[in-house]
Length: 305
Ligand code: GLU
Image (cartoon, rainbow, N blue to C red):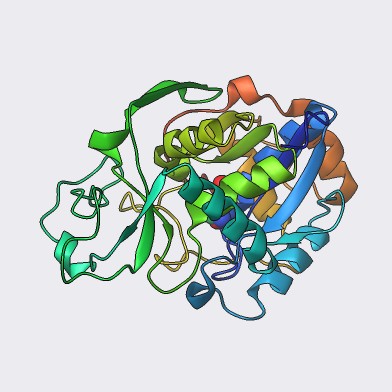
């Protein structure tokens, strides 16, 4: 939207809880890749889902990044301050007839086919106008066609939007803008041309590219990092109560994140600027493994006798 302004990467945490290992991996990978390309690295607080964001988490995340020696460029963008811009873009989409009001409740979508991310594919009830008796609750994006893109870590991707995603919500029934709209608007606004993030978001990428194309904006390159899972194969997340990274000593988690991203095991006490010097030397996007896996322990347990 602002034209190309050089390599720009970003880390965009949602402050719904303290930073855990999975988010640290995204922070580390996006930071090292942005710097390896001689680019800027931005931090954006994705607090657009206000009911899920808790006060204090955004500050705690920033304090942790600071303690860990991440250096971001420019001020932190905060999505909760950006509603006017999202509303403006929604109006533009309305004028293009690319979105439509939807009066369906969540319960009415029970039994809908599942998309590739497990979420229901909207059956299209309100697509051609609100049926009698329904009032507009949300705004949905009309999806058509398919999207192909080449992910720098996960390889070639293809998604049939109507079948695998369906018409997704851009303005929610509770009045908040959806992540899918906010992320596209902000990546374009900030000139982000390189998105490095967890592969749990790869199912969202095709719809984001679709939206970028509708709006005439550039599509960044995408690199989706492997997802960290626990011993039961569950994604490490705030929902699975993943342990927060210790802000007083983030180095063991950073060393483990580096190994998780395919870097050679660092010396066991590597920390501070020594860690960063080492990390900039050994970072290699091409060496990042694709598959989800368990994080290895920072220091292997001593062999039992
Ligand atoms: N805010 C999202 C999250 O924390 C990340 C969005 C993105 O990187 O595109 O899961």
